[in-house]
Image 1 (cartoon, rainbow, N blue to C red):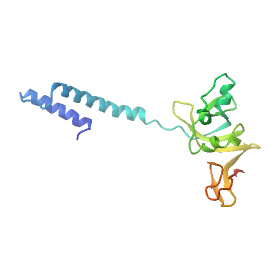
Image 2 (cartoon, one colour):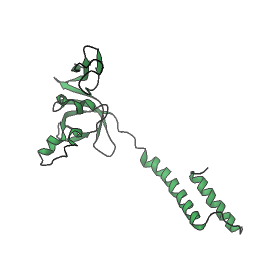
Image 3 (cartoon, rainbow, N blue to C red):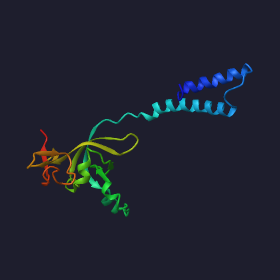
Image 4 (cartoon, rainbow, N blue to C red):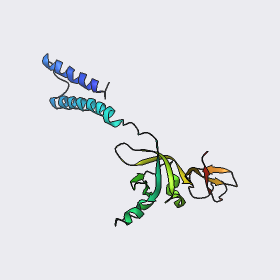
Length: 185
C-alpha cells in the first residue's frame, strides 16, 4: 500500500531484483535512492513518535499559592512585558516563592477574567506539562479560613450557574453575574 514504509521497501526490493535479472528498472537510481531513504526515515519516524511523541500526562495534583499577574512580578525585577501579552500572563506563586505559569484553559478561564480572584489564597487542581513548569488547571478553589471554596458565577433572575464570568453578565437576561464562593463539604 502506498505511503506504508513496508510498501516502499518492497518496491525498492522489486527494483533491485529486476536489475539483477537484467531487466529494465521502472525506477531510476535517483528515485530508488529517494524511496529507500524515505522508507528508512518513515520507519524511524514511526518508532520515534511512539517513543517520544506520546508522553504520559503528569498526575493531577493540588497546588496551593496565590495567582498573580506576571507583569507585576516582572515589573519588580525591571522587566516589562508587551502590553498585549500582559492579560494572558498569570502564574501561581507558591509558599516557597516559586512561580508556575498558568495556561489559559477552560478550567482557568475565570482566573484570567476576574481580577477579584488574584492575589489571594487558592488551590489549583492541575497537572504540570511534561518537561516544563506550565500548569494546566482543571479546577480551582479559593481558600478562606483554611477551607477550600468552590467558585462559580450565578444569575439570580434566571438561576443560571457558570464557571467563569465571560462578559460579567447573564447571556439570558443581561443581569450581572454574581461571584459565589461556597465552602466544600
